[in-house]
Length: 360
Image (cartoon, rainbow, N blue to C red):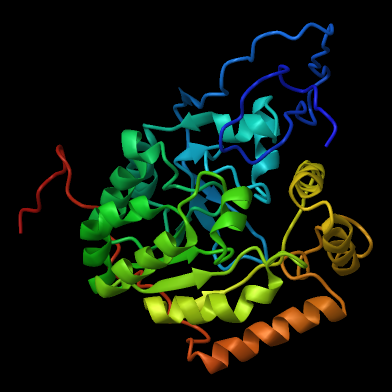
């Protein structure tokens, strides 16, 4: 791989996914580093930095026909797991940062999120529907252990009787089984655990700071045993790299206690495509052309086609074959095709200081 100059020469990048740190697409200038030929001492390791943000609103609404939810919350911006395929990487460009190394090392925490969430849920015009958490960046990434923002958000949702669906790779979710099991008994929560591959070496390369696949399967077991409905999410399926594991992943998920399963094809929007190609050429140069050939065949000849209805699965014979294999494996392993909706009839703002007590 050619030496990149978007970060200092000699910079150590321990357990990072991206190979470069090009400026975001909205930036007028690019920072480049050029060597003068001297063999200098190695630069220090690239450390994770966390800054704080006070959000004006925390619930984000969407109208995408491809998504099963219309609202979500994100306690953090950026994600230290460093998954090279993460479709959320381009969101860092809105912050004036790179979708590459910045996305996984320059993180933003939103400690006021629980208070803002409670305020929004109390609005008299608010109508409850399932809130999704973890659909952009992982809410149980390592910094949640220190900041605890998601746990406090879950307490708010529990107290309001509000339904929530969580997606994560993080085993820290086990810390919150006390809250989640209580919500599960009332039909208010569902969890999806993402397991991309059963190959620990490949996982370390793809998702350098995420827990190992076996550890994630153990989390599925822990949640299931606590009565929390859990789904295994075999996403993304990477053609020519992880697609041969579909049946094995679904079998392992079932054995761990998952009652449902889902999948999404690899998506490479905006800056993700060049970052992923860099990663491929570095780790799997012999397969890079094959993988990207399949991707482009499913995306109308492009690295990514953002059309609603097809962007999550792709089109063409290869995409159809993956869909058929997944459907057959669902039947073989007895997964539920569709789970019942979470309850919204229990929603109600809890009493707070200053509320007028009823006289009757």
